[in-house]
Amino acid sequence: MNVSGIEIEVVKKDIKNMHLNVMPPSGKVRISAPYGTSDDAINLFAVKKVSWIKKQVEKFKSQERQTEREYITGESHYLWGRRYKMEVRYSNKGNNIEIKGNKMILTVREKSTQQQRENYVNEWYRSELKSKLPALVDKWEQIIGVKASSVGVKNMRTRWGTCNPETKRILVNLQLAKKPVKCLEYIVIHELVHLREKNHTKAFIEQMDSYMPDWRVVKDELNSFIMDRYLEE
Image (tube, rainbow, N blue to C red):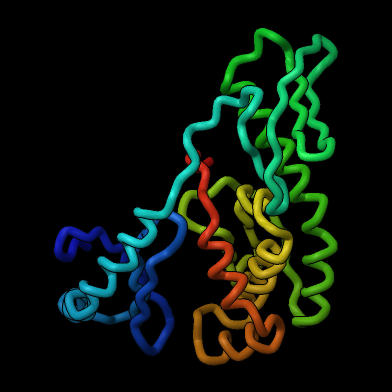
């Protein structure tokens, strides 16, 4: 649906009321509507919210973005919210990443391309994320009283996390390895609560308040971080 030049994704669900979301990090706009809601009713709902939507979209669009990565010495890279200066070294024995002090030492073959370095660094981030996920997921599954069928990692453009309440499958964004661990924990809690409450209902908010009282602060912190430019897998 296009309203005043704004592309809006419309999703119909088993809910009672319409919900509007402008999602980080790109400002994608989505309206969730009950089954049977007419296009005219959805359009009218969107028109009434146009001013607010434009302000939110502009906020995300104006958010600072990292310049395209070259994976060269001197670049800044992040791990768990801390910034490191990359130092590139060359070896024919294989690729490696090592954290020493404030340095992220990337060892690669001398003739490696930018894309090959990026692929390796992303896989390293994936392994870092997967090293922290099991303990966090297990902790909060027990507290919340739910069980995910699987928890995976994916490079996503518009979401920090997503879940399918039917299959109980959860995905978290690869970029979370660059943010403070508290942000990853917030996303884990958020998606696990969705296994009990599909939508952002009053009950959902109450559970989030119970499990992580400062979740709104963490959410704002997460959305304030500089985002990388990357392609969705």
